[in-house]
Image 1: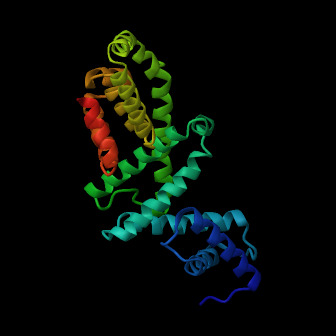
Image 2: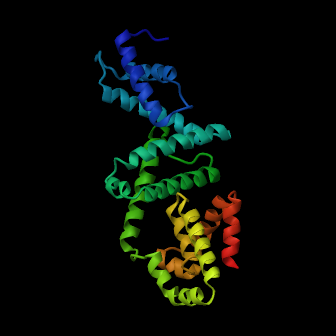
Image 3: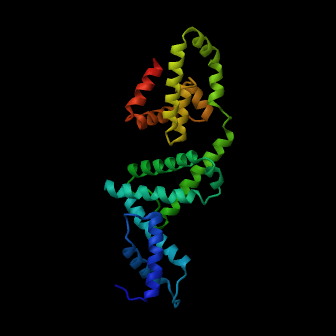
Length: 265
């Protein structure tokens, strides 16, 4: 144990607790991080007796970055899950401090979509290569932030290019058919409308924007994969992937799956 003054120990411990809450929960303890911060500070001090809060935070983040990188690469599922939980928390906070913050503050589902894309990319990367990530583990958090900014930028750019599309407007094409059905079989029309609303509510409960879009446009706007790919400026393969993942996310909701089946009939 390194000897130190109570004031310095308290200062470092406070920083350790704050940084762990940001990116190293269940990976490092405040006591362990405090000791490691002090060790690195003793190497860097060069005659300075009282480190600034900013310097201690930078040291703490570098230490946590190394620990988080090791957890991210860990073959142990529980350790890796803890790493991804911390990554999500850290990147969510980072997104709020980027130049795109105002865009995502207005659209929480878009922020969720970007976060999921980044985490999925990182997951696929480490499953393919157990040593995925930067060579310098201390820059792991910066590496993850770079991926976040790249995805956020891509989202904003794509959003600017996408045409303004309204599901309600698309449904207007079928209003004449619906009116005929209403007059010919009122009870069937009412049941169909109730089924449609239940389906729409269930789809909108999904957090991922792309999943919602694909299911809404497929089941309620009657668009095929090629039309959707053109609309969203993506490949048909991505449409298939999003629809598969969206349905998989809803598979445990038996009532919804019955609604989907009834809607197809």
